[in-house]
Amino acid sequence: MKIVVAGSHGLIGTALVARLAQDGHEVSRLVRGAPSGPAEVPWDPAHGVLDPRALEGAGAVVNLAGAGVGDKRLTDAYKEVVRTSRTSTTSLLARTIARLDGPRPVLLQASGIGAYGERGDEVLDETSALGDTFFAGVVRDWEAAAQPAVDAGARVAFLRTGIVLAPQGGALERMLPLLRAGVAGRLGTGRQFWSWITLPDEIGAIVHLLHADVSGPVNLSAPHPATNEEITRELARVLHRPALIPVPSLALKLVLGDFSSEVLGSIRALPAVLVRSGFQWEHPAVDDAVAWVAGEVRRGRS
Image 1 (cartoon, rainbow, N blue to C red):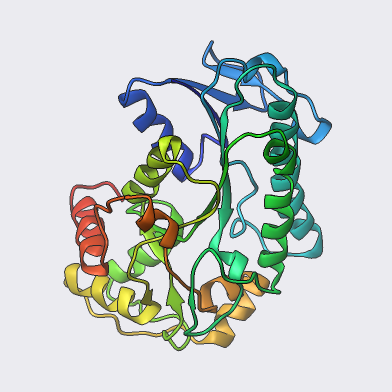
Image 2: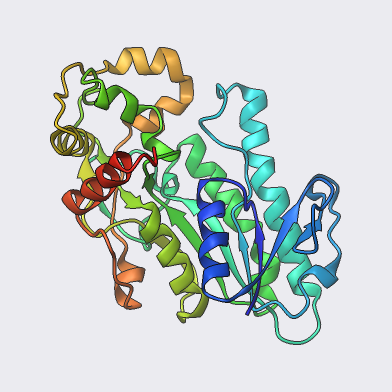
């Protein structure tokens, strides 16, 4: 299958492209700069520029593009970058898919469980109402930008990804060195639920959704959400390190600003759609996940 990937150079995109190539797919990457080879196609979402021929014959388009929410302090200006980097790419791809003649490719559109906002211990699934936080608002606009493809009859699935656990990048990028040094602990109270997923399961779920008859929101998370304290404690255990020093909520708010809500907020999301569609996790529980992370760390992949 020909698969077009946007946002292919981040943590998820890099792993996804490698998996798709391994599975024998023809992968085409959309890039903003000059193409470095025939597998790359230029586009300019800010100015609405994408040659429709880039999508012709594709069985699927996977859009992972968007500015990193934790890369910079969330000033009002950067919040706008976060929003528009998602809506402009999604809108351009959706409009281009809608204009294609013949069968339209599946659109697997990145999204996030930040859609639900701060919800404490409430159990959430894809039918739950969206929240009222900044990130929930971003998700509303992000997913709405795909409407032209939906209206044109394309199958569109929204990948509401949880906290991705990996030995490099993602949520553990800053935590793991501290844990290995024995000086890290829970964040804030530690009681906030993290709806997590390992990188292999994230990639596996995306590959699964290429063919599964699924449309609309899909929570990409493990079936057993855990609290931050549980994840931190289990990581420290398998790394044979103490988890000694908790990070106070106030300190996180001072350092991270509005992004602290993503670290301290509690989202207990369940992957109901993935379960119903028959997806099988490699790492369904926290102990499975941290054992994999620790194994990768010991092999020098962190």
